[in-house]
Amino acid sequence: MKLSERIGKVPPYIFVQISRKIAAKKAEGIEVISFGIGDPDIPTPSNILDALHEASLDPPNHRYPESEGLPEFRQSVADWYKRRFGVTLDPETEVLSLIGAKEGIGHAAFCFIDPGDIALVPDPGYPVYGIGTLFAGGSSYIMPLTEDNNWLPDFEAIPRTVADKATVMWLNYPNNPTGAIADKQFFDRAVKFAKDYNIAVMHDACYTEVAYDGYQPPSFLEVDGAKDVGLEFHSLSKSYNMTGWRIGMVAGNQEMISALLTIKSNLDSGVAQAVQHMAIEGLRQTDESIEARNSVYQSRRDRIIPVLRDMGMRVIPPKASLYIWAGIPDGYTSAEFAEKVLDDTDVLMIPGGSYGEAGEGYVRLSVTLSDSLIDTALERLAGWQG
Image (tube, rainbow, N blue to C red):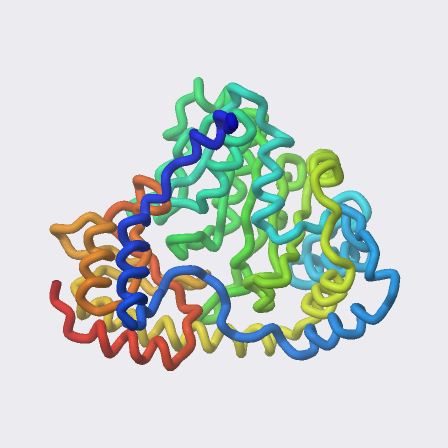
């Protein structure tokens, strides 16, 4: 049996050693508490589940959906963008349903990248940006994100020879894994850079509805010219505690939306229509319900950070996202530090190097654990000195 060359090019899972330790601890009956995956522990709101139940009883929803999504779903996305960001969208041509944002992000590479093309990819960053580029036959040029530049890419540092060959640039704010935020001035610079070099901007905005301290993240599509050059990917997963239902959306440039629909209609059959009705109900959620959910995450953030600082870690409280990005003490790589903490406390943090070379020296913690598990984890971590 012959496997494709692209399978052999997929980077190895660098977390293998720690995964083996977790498995060994579990085999011994030890409970490992993981601050790993950003999967909301708060249940999907009951009114959204009620909408699923009602829609599931309607026979038309038992049949194949369309790849572009129900007209009612696309209209609800357009209504939400107008209400939330002041952005006007044509639901017929500028909105598309996704089987979760990850699916759309992965498929987007095939719309804009031919073999030999370059994608501008943030590091540290969500691995799918680079993996999608690899699968499409392109190569990634790394845009380093560092504390010194507030975890924003420096467009002026990108060589002109690279920019001339680049066809796609990935951005993600609020950011995973760093929790960094971007303002409209930054998005203005991104639009200008994209127009100067004829680059498609792909903005992953999946965390705009998870924010703290009164902060409201903007949309890339709010800035002048954004729809000329880009798309914005969004998800119901983090916004409305719907990770398991797999529905998201992409909005923006009409020609780019059409290209992605061409890819999707040939590779998938769209999102189950009953799930789309869940999303329609979700997009009607009030600001008060979102703020109540975020207050839970903010409380967790504020309990975790002092303990990390007592462990000798450098932490700036994030204004958005589900993550705490913490600088580790000197003398360790991020993987060594995570492994040492796991050995000593049975608590797992994700090494920053898992998200790219620029993530070395940091660990990521998610706030999506139950309060009781967080209490236990913080008790274990209290007083740890390495």
